[in-house]
Amino acid sequence: MTEKQTRWRPWLLTAAAALILSLLLAGSAWRISRMRCFVLVGAATCRVETPRAMVALTFDDGPTALGVGYILPELERHGAHATFFLIGREARGRPELVRAILAAGHEVGNHSYSHQPMVGRVMTFYENQIQLAQDALRRAGAEPKSFRPPYGKKLIGLPRAVERAGLRLVMWDVEDPKTSDPTEFAREIVSQARPGSIILIHAMYPANETARRALPAVLEGLGRKGLQVVSVEQLVETGKTQP
Image 1 (tube, rainbow, N blue to C red):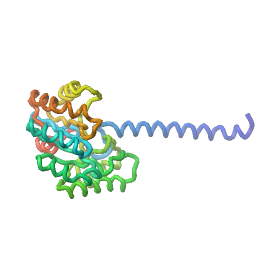
Image 2 (cartoon, helix red, strand yellow):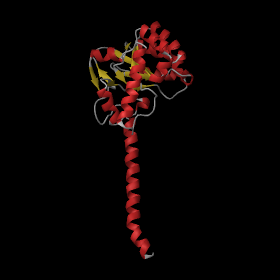
Image 3 (cartoon, rainbow, N blue to C red):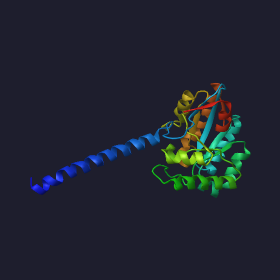
Image 4 (cartoon, rainbow, N blue to C red):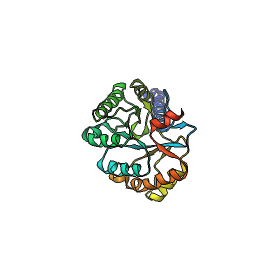
């Protein structure tokens, strides 16, 4: 090894160690951002400690004619209420669907304006995404009180922006399972649900056919367990939110 190589070796080793450490920290931050019920600052509502036999049913994304057109009749048939976390950009293009959700007695929440991952951004990005979605939803007649981050990802900046906007950060403790069998889909959700649960279902897009086909069985199964299906706001009013 030459003298020049000898001089450079400690620097290269230090740089390599720093790179490895940065990658490990980035990987850890990414994993933390995906943890449903953990936030580094602020608070997230994943379920509610309630004396009532209730669960909150939530739908993410859209609104789309396909999803809303299927979901609303099923909810009405079972006497259920839900919270729809809607994307601001899609709500702006289909305000009549937002109005239909509200007219049916359901709650509308904020799911960002463009549904981009909301980690590793500057604070103004979070604030703009929240405010643009709020504006679009308000123009359609809604007044969201809750926010759900796209893909459930959040670290420090987003929870702070949500709090500043006066919104509740809402996650979930039961979510749509990875199966293409509607019967299994419904069975898993119903088996995991308990009083105070917040259930997440994606049923807005063509790729969500399994969830749509499973929805009647989900609602029937929750009813057989004696669980009333309500919106997030209705559930929160009955008890104390839990991380």
